[in-house]
Amino acid sequence: MQHLMSGITHKKLKQRETDVGLDVIEVDNQFCNAVIAVQGAQVLHYQQKHKAPVLWLSEAHRFQPTKAVRGGIPICFPWFGGHPTQPDLPSHGFARNRLWQLQDVTVQDDEHLLLFQLDSSDETYALWPHHFQATLQVRLGAQLQLTFSVLNKDQHAFDFSFALHSYFNIQDIHQTQVRGLLNTPFLDQLNPEKGDQQCEAQPISFTAEMDRIYQQAQGSYQIVSPLEAPIHIESTGCSSVVVWNPWAEKSARLGDIATGAWQNMLCVECGCVAAATVSLAAGQRIEYQMAAFRD
Ligand code: BG6
Image 1 (cartoon, protein in one colour):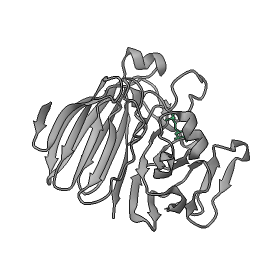
Image 2 (image 1 turned 135 degrees about the vertical axis):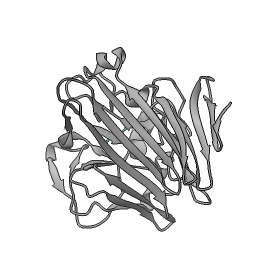
Image 3 (image 1 turned 90 degrees about the vertical axis):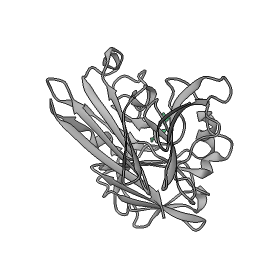
């Protein structure tokens, strides 16, 4: 175990069954505690002091190198979902499966800031023929704040899509609603042939598997339930929001969610996906933000 600075520990999280280690950074300060995996720069846990955890992490997940952990906030980049033309390429891109570099750790106003970086390499070029640098700044205070940026180091423009695939921790999906997406058009990924649909004028509630991409989203959402304090989500620059719960049957198929645990998770994923794919000119850098916290 290595101490990086006050309130921060770098250690190996033991894989439960096969003992393969995953490098994680643990943070504990006056506002919160958090765990971030270096693989994928994936926030696995964030909890404000004296409040319930904001993020859900599957108890059934087996930690494996090059496989994203089910839960927390995997980063989908440089594509979202299946690759548009090569279905054999990894779902949700490769950023969540690769080791990022921890570049910097600082403290500002007693909050910890961690900066992770992922640079293109021969290996990423074989999957996606572009030169890029992606960074994720993780700010750990009374809110969890993520700033994701992409720099185009090519001589020409490239297209990418991305999502901060956040798994939120909820008490019961049947009693949970999402607010902030009224009258926002969505694509139902379970029935894509229906095309864009207009959301009904009421908060989203859940009675079956849901997998929707909302576009032209306004950036402020709340996960509410009579059972617990609301979770607030604020995003900047992210015009898409994916709302996903796999329900019982798909959870069983995925194989890394314990029986019944889908009732305690809800993904509200801010990003730019599908029709909102980003075109980034040579030499340009673009930045997106997302914050989450419990009342
Ligand atoms: C969601 C997608 O973002 O991620 C779903 O909308 C998908 O369609 C889910 O099933 C999980 O994907 P994965 O690759 O992590 O199992």
